[in-house]
Image (tube, rainbow, N blue to C red; front, side):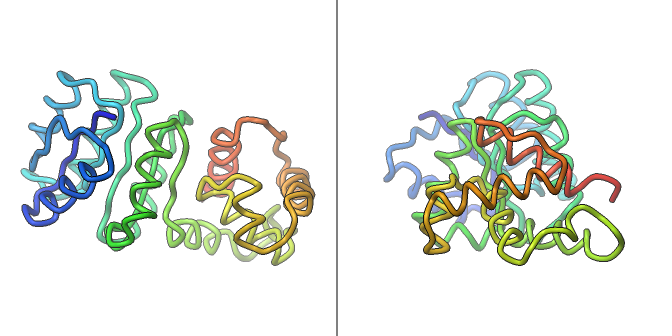
Length: 217
């Protein structure tokens, strides 16, 4: 699996290269700036890009904007964005086009090697990997008022959070130590309460839920 990596901190970039290489990924480019990232994404057609939000020369959202531009040129290009802090605006921008193959993780997740590698593989396969803290903040912004999310039970909110992280019904069942049938029922209730059509496409289901949660912010 071909990876373009963008991270301006040398030690972290080197560590990520070593980690991903050890798990069978091919690092076709490891760059430290926005212009380098743009060229790599355009010329090397990777299977997935792992991108720091903030890159030189602006040190604002250069990495994210380069990734979004590349996705406009190549719709569906898998992109996993890394950020030091939860930035809901960045998560919204990443989710805006509705295509799969996206992820948003805090850099702290990198130190959980199994979780991070799984997230890269999931995004590369067209799935979604959203940091739990991002999901928590999106959910908390919906608090108050007569909104569909308020109709969910505490258990349904738990299921929704795990669903938004890209987990399958089987994965959610294992996490919550319940049957897969119970999760299927919760999922059905969630979609009914949020007014969303049930889909067999797990990734599009997650994107639909996230888009709904983020609407009318």
